[in-house]
Image (cartoon, rainbow, N blue to C red; front, side):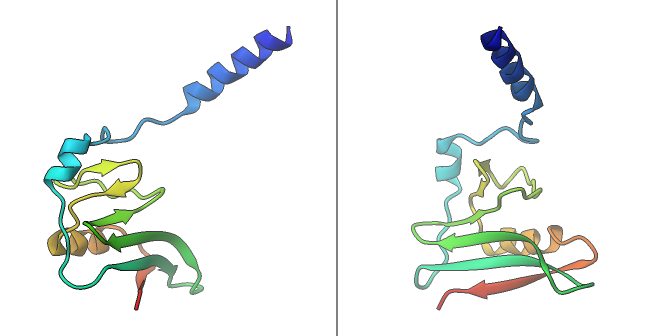
Amino acid sequence: MRLSAACVLLLLLAACAQTPAVPYASKARTEAVAYRAPGPDTFTIFTMVSNRNGKGAHSALMINGSQRVIFDPAGSFVNERVPEREDVLYGVTPAVLAGYKVRMPAAPFTWSARPSR
């Protein structure tokens, strides 16, 4: 009986899982759009800050190493030219970064960025 109940519970939980709005990109696709910004390796933390109380509401991490990517857990940025795989956005060129910064904040929030030194 317990085994049956556990199986039913697992099936119910699996049914609650959300599929991504856009299917995850293949490794070949993420490699095809790879971009590396000039300069040293860096990481930048982006935080969406409330204009009402100054508290952070959502954060993302941009990494510029062998390529520039943005790790954006629970983010909602979708662009057919920017492949996503497991919460990582690939091909983050200067134009993509500008679009990301404009698209992501929703009133009453603004971005705060803290680059590494």
